[in-house]
Length: 396
Image (cartoon, rainbow, N blue to C red; front, side, top):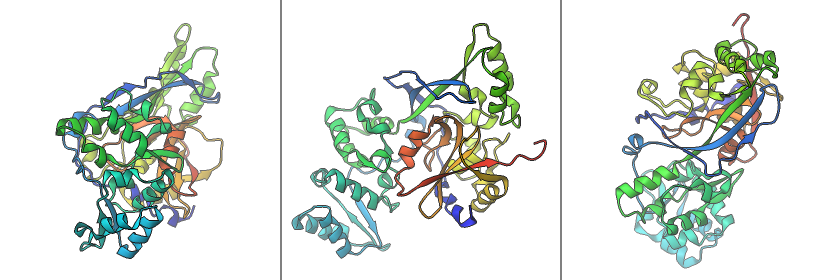
């Protein structure tokens, strides 16, 4: 891959100021055990769980205004009029939205429209995607730029256990849209107007910020290919830290199951299912997906990898592009149609990866399915995945 391909590593780098020590965890109501395909990684099964940030972070989380808004940057009023008309709005609605005195371009040439609930609901499913795609281009629309992902589009399962009134749940169903490989919800402002208090609004936000992860276990006994398992989970013996646990589990009479996090290198083992903490934040930047991927095998975190040029240099110097089959520790880079890397995660086994999704402190490190990562990051048209493998030095 050429150097320009990584000039957007910066996409995942944002300053951070919030701290989190614990996490609210809930098992999915449908807690059926699923099984990975057989492979050199052994016999793995997993179940879904949902992670929610605890109150210690949400108490400082700025709730948005309950007034819906659509922002367009560096667009003319005439362009906005035509765009709205193409979405199916009649002339009277277009004039009401664009002629609103609050919608005049500001000093940064941002046009802000204030649609009513009826305006938002009037969109067809297809036009909702068109609108969401346009609004996602502008950071002034945070809930479109970084929308909430609804796993598999199953709103009922995603919100199970979250205490929301029926009318709000119905709105979320209506406003969830499919874009690329995933389903998303962006109208957080609209539903917050139905909250009776700040406390209730924060409770709703906590529920809507749930992310799906998996708890995976390796089943092992003396009948397994233990030498093969040792080689796989130690990256061909370059990182043998977890082998004592693997050996101990295999020696248990009748076999046992080993939580997959015990097989991760020390740094991701500590980070899994957690959020940012004060010592991590001292760099002044939030660790992101690329920091997470490139630090996977490091015994201590290297915060220089928060630097765009240094992170790019490490990929080009210390990794080599590969094709399938993939193995433990390979890095999967999501590339847009121009070849720019906008997300990365680490391959564990079969369909499981280690990742930090999102550019902020309300997103945890987690083990999840690659299919779930594709749902979140598959909005980019014509994206592709390029996989890189670490080049180990002799004896390293």
